[in-house]
Length: 261
Image (tube, rainbow, N blue to C red; front, side, top):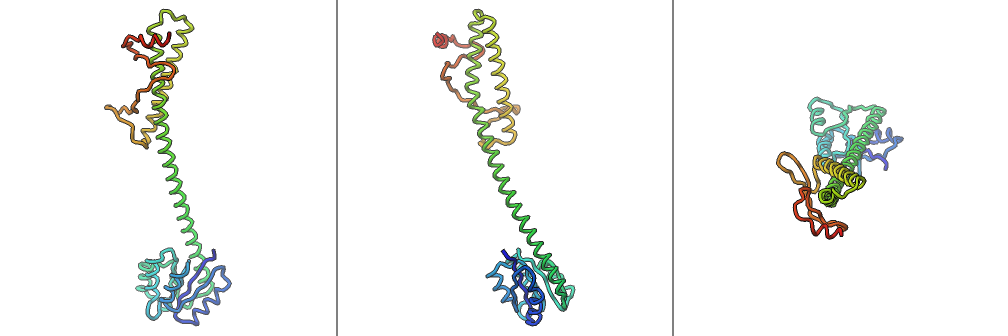
């Protein structure tokens, strides 16, 4: 989209002279002879840079730029005046937030360079704003992915812990009830299974602790006294083997032995 520059001056001769000097510049020029006309153009056009004379009947250049700063802050503002004074300059800077302050008579080349710098500044600000918006959206997506991953990890850990507990109880019960009839190879297999289950449980605990340290997304983690944070384990039965008694061997285990037979 072509950039737009608005020139505002109540002196038509000066206004036409500035427009003629800038006619070869790569942007579209609009002109206005009063602050009211400039306001109308700003309401109906997307203006990038405005160059306004200070001494105008009705609305002064400072008043116009102050109004623009409040209503169209994205428009870069340049003050042009034939009677510079400290008070005017301070008001233009403090209230109108002008980008540059030029005095009449203004060298057309200097005006062209100032407008080009103003356009480059606005393009840089817009690009920075775009990158900040993109970065903000990416951070939101990353945060959403992290929460989803934490929730998924917590659910997976809990789903795996239940069958692991069943396997652990079953292996321990086999070892306690039938260790006298086990041959060395069978005993080695059971010991290996117990070691593997312990390793898996340790890995799951570490994974769950890591997710909880990052801030669990689903809020279902529970903290035990002393800072030990674990996920609740729900009771579930194994599809292939009944749940065995715990490692202490409590219970007579006859139902479990009958199922093996």
